[in-house]
Length: 362
Image (tube, rainbow, N blue to C red; front, side):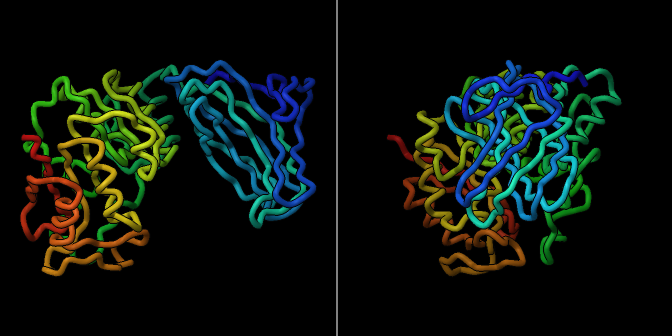
């Protein structure tokens, strides 16, 4: 990997003047609720993915180091490190929205300590070009863990470096095989692929796209796809996969679902909202936001398929950050959001429900 940034090419955030050549930098915050930082400037290739490693030496415990991507649209947090002792840290990033720098900031906001951080031996390298098969395996592993099984020129991401997710809680094993676990999320894709319309030329949005499996499959069928997620690391994985696969008609953006109506100023021919509703505190609000983005939506979520009550169930053994809806609750929420054609695609006893929802535009 070719080194493209050195300390000699770094700039201070405050003031915006070039730093003289030296072997290390010091970030120092003497009071609470302040920050200090340096900005590393380079003319990045917006389609590439970069790997940075550096040594950091804090002089106290509970010191916060933030890695920030300042862009034309918004500030994106790449990574945060809470430091208690000297260590070497690494992070992956990919430019977005014409960003040409990354920033390293020490912050004493919240409960983090004041003090200083010495930064040494910083270097950033472009992961492209890929040299050979072994190099692709090495860099795919470096980008992991992967939640989606994506075929990168014969290399399957989850076989190189996978997460332990999706989890298989009690009661799901009869629906979810070991091979399903390995090839996630192909098993979900198979539940609704045949129900998709002719996609050639359609504008499609993939909400909570993760590393992009569904986005790529839609693009292969001729759709013009935007994949969004609030996880920067997942978007970087998706951008890496896009370049390896050479798929042009798909793009990825950092967007939180709470801000989706404000940040995406368009309507789509088809929207996918898969594996999201059981991860949010207010799923009805999310359904309403998604309904504003298009008149045809495919929703997929864990659900309680046994209860006939219209309710959200607090079941932390299944989801720790949201609720498990019942099917009657989902149908009513879709109806309230303006959908008039609500079709449950999956079998009635299958706990990962898929609904195809449309608005009657006549």
